[in-house]
Image (tube, rainbow, N blue to C red):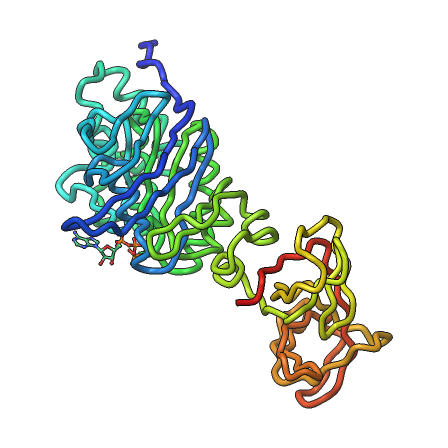
Length: 356
Ligand SMILES: Nc1ncnc2c1ncn2[C@@H]1O[C@H](COP(=O)(O)OP(=O)(O)OP(=O)(O)O)[C@@H](O)[C@H]1O
């Protein structure tokens, strides 16, 4: 058995105050975050917020206006230095799959392995074909594969040379929803199996949540927050993150204690001290799963719209103040639009922002 070149895993990538731009105007501003061994990170944000630009800077295709990028403690880019893309040990997968049409699937996967001994190359290609579920496809050409199969080949090609880090720019956006749903967990499992650190760019939060251990939410070039999907959803640190992620509404509220606010839905107590001063006017984030239909509650609202979601109904409910909020109800509670229903609040942690 031929011994394969040893795999060098990423220990840590660190971005410190990275700004990147075009023609002297920064489109990524002071981005800082860290990616650790085996972690799958994600840059999530609306179109044009600078995700691809930041990814391209990490890959070595854009230079830095300020800041520093380090891989395993070694500076690969700052204002005056930029290690060549091909020397960064970074693999890339793009939205437009871009396989070589005149090469077989095996030749595509082997493309970055030309320096490897023949036997090791063959073993690596066979291993990867198997890993991405395409054993037996080695002699086929890209045009004879489905979009999802082609994207698996693109992944195999990118990870074949054992890069320290895999960058993926909207790799699923050319695929239909059903295929995407199947492929995302598969790709995650493959990266996990390879202990490969990766950074994904997407504007789709469900994709981000399904793929990533850590999500960096961006808006207008600024990284607002980096955290686990759970933290991003339940503990958003900025108003933008709170409103961009998931469904939610802001209820006007007044602070009435160290872990209490008073709102249209009564006094709401959180588990933690929120740090706001007594009587401060705040906007309190309420998600659909924070407000439940409750016949016994004194707080009521009028249903203004409803959606049947199989296991539950999602209602939009107008409160006495005129504020409209989401509300979950089990699918046995089928109420008509215009009907009044009772509401109870189930909020463990209070996410709120001072009113502007
Ligand atoms: N080569 C370029 N020259 C000048 N401006 C550019 C260039 N590439 C991107 N931009 C601009 O930089 C900003 C950020 O673009 P970028 O592609 O990084 O955003 P994005 O978040 O990846 O968007 P999308 O999700 O639509 O791909 C945009 O305003 C874009 O028009």
